[in-house]
Image (cartoon, rainbow, N blue to C red; front, top):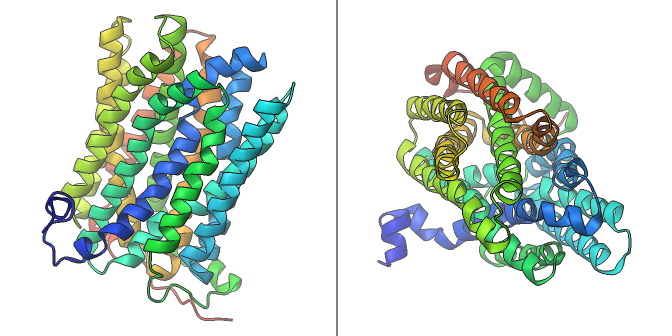
Length: 422
């Protein structure tokens, strides 16, 4: 038995151990898609100077990527339910790489590249829509036992958050060589993930379903008519968590440079501190919840309470060490909640509709990512207190939804759906 088996996946005869390289390959998608977006956050102040743009304009470099994904993710989910996960993921990774190449080429060769960069980012978002969100249902298809699904979702969410930890460091390093190099690294990362998926991930059994669009709409209506309360709660909580996270990162990136004089790798390392806490919390949460829906609910609730409490605490002092500590604890709360939300959905929705429902959830998360930076950029002009009250208020809404709407005794059996042709 290898050390890898012992630490990550338990006994060597488990299904997790047998599929460890498939898991690593699938986990590369959120890692690389996260790098492709979060890596730009610490570089935005530098881009403002190089491109002669405002904070709001620089925030759109993050936002357009997410906006296009919001609308395309549900379509990608339906296509993955009908034709199979890999058939959707592979071309999406290629499109994401092309988008990064266009943005990097424009920044390198053009005198006024801003709008072409945005176009490349839009194309990159198209690719992300068909790659990142399909990971959740693919994991659900790969394993028979719910606790294996939960454990793997924890690994995948950890890969996602590890990408966020690595992003500010790698982005700052690459931009220190050439300011547009983060764009050009995206095709390289996408190619790596593409090769891993093609070579190491086997097509799950029953990966293709005879799901007509008419039946798809009927199934969606059936699921939401019976489970609209907790599904809506999970979707809204996911959006708020990502809004808070990316808003916090945008704010922290700005004040580290503007107020405290940190830039380059030094700033990247400081941004990585709250993200590292988020990464560790995601991994721990995913390992601990197993297949227990009550655990998922209460970890989500207390994670949100911790997040909101830390946001309010930020009012007490503007000392650098204090703020970094507060944001690190805030990251723990977000990181603990995210794998629980993933697992609630994958364990409560039938395989035939899992891609669609989890894709709607991913759209909501991308909505939070899209809204966070521009909203925070606008509110920073009005002072930090109004921004903190907004984030704290959203945290309170999330906590109430988690407490009141997520009912573990009711989520386990979502309504049966019929994938037959009409």
